[in-house]
Image 1 (cartoon, rainbow, N blue to C red):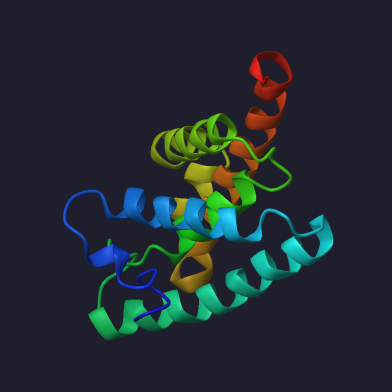
Image 2 (cartoon, rainbow, N blue to C red; image 1 turned 30 degrees about the horizontal axis):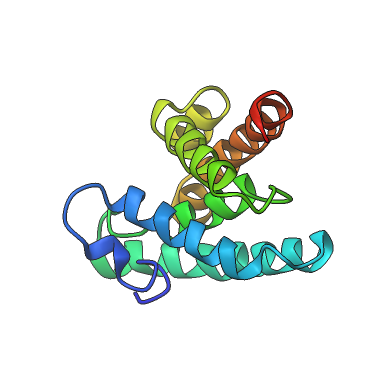
Length: 146
């Protein structure tokens, strides 16, 4: 439950996904100086472990995609910020974009959310939202970055 809930941030009141995303931004600040390949390895490892832990949390809580499971937001946020410039504005924009894509769930995010279940389903829609936010962040940063 510790991993699934993002070090228990998923238990914080109101908007657990937002707390999980904030944790993801915090982790990014610690990882962002890594080369892209090792960074991707860390994110991939978190995805694999997160998938297992999210699936276990569903069984423990006897509820599909429980709100306290936020490891998916952590991974999605880390995907969003991959290769982002070390700038508070980039981190803030990446955080905002990921939350928007995670909440509005454009296709195929919504399809993944509705059709893939278990730990993999919990994780995949946030991966897709993270990819949308990653692309949008890098495109926007070209125009608005310092």
